[in-house]
Length: 191
Image (cartoon, rainbow, N blue to C red; front, side, top):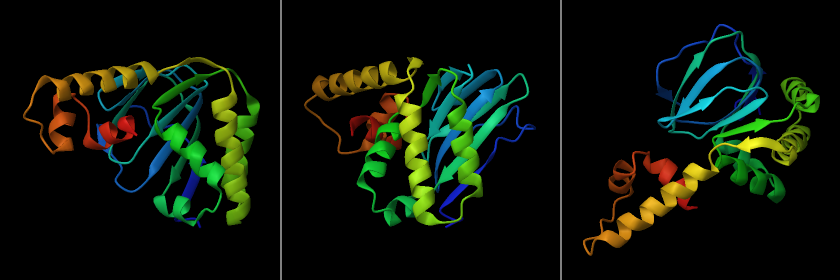
């Protein structure tokens, strides 16, 4: 199970990184302390703790952190989702994978749930804690959901692109390039 999900404290020495992507997992980063920015697919998000970032595989991201970060990182491989029989967990994962960033109100239970995930070895229990964590994240009244507006703009721009011409291309990468995003991000937004 450890190869399907990995949870660890956010490394305090990570401050500035080069743009990079992860090809094999979905990443959830929770920061309870820190300041600076996190850029995901050319969109810069301010770090205003407590903040949760969601990075889908193939998305390009990088950090520019000004102060000591505190929080957790959760890496989730597709195999975990494939193995899970919990439809509700899969639905919540689908919801959060459409997001990039949420600024939350203070809530100590999120840190506790991350810590429980670090220590847990049983798959069924891990499934339950992960479901509780994600449900908690999306149920806490957020100061402001950061990227829904961008998603709506991308969909509107995509529709305009499709309506502009009779010469439609059967190529996601072409339209993603026109919209300054990745093919994976365009697919996720359209879903």
